[in-house]
Length: 228
Ligand code: SAH
Image (cartoon, rainbow, N blue to C red):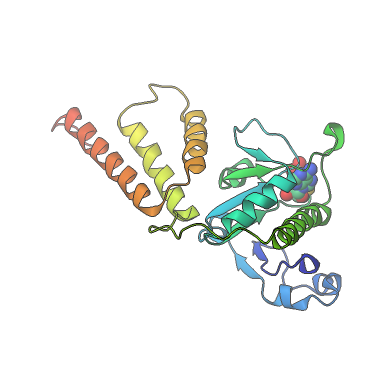
């Protein structure tokens, strides 16, 4: 990653860190390891990010936008104009869990052959790091277009989006939207819809205001005898 101009490494619950093997493999890029930040959970690691992409070797049943590496690199570089963006990689043996992937706003898949799709972690990182490098070189060459007008309201962070989704899930329960059907599927679709819209912080506040009112009306409809 250092060779491609990437410096910020965040590690989630590493088994061993620091470790002399990692130091040896870094082959002089000690500054990246020394500056690595450690988090207990992926949610905490990406909390301040505006845009989060999860790299996965498997095509999941999870309905989620999926980008090839070059489009992902363009999307990430575009997003960094607004704030930090993250590229998330999974464990060498087991990859990312579905829960971890759901914390990502879109997936990245290197179109490897279908019956042998999984690259080693370091190789996958290099493919994406190279695409980011290539795209940033291309943008410099094209004399990158001036960034658009500065938005008056900052985009919502990943943590704020998670707060919104929790509130939405609770509201759907409260208004009995599911009627016995499994809530996961519709929540996944709504997540993708809202992430695609990239709401700003004011829009998230408005949506949460609507949810709060819906919850209040649901309480009223249940009547004064209701415990919840
Ligand atoms: N058995 C795991 C593979 C883990 S490979 C699985 O099926 O998910 C380690 C990591 O490298 C993955 O979590 C992913 O982040 C990345 N990776 C490997 N192959 C990839 C591919 N074809 N496209 C995108 N990312 C890939």
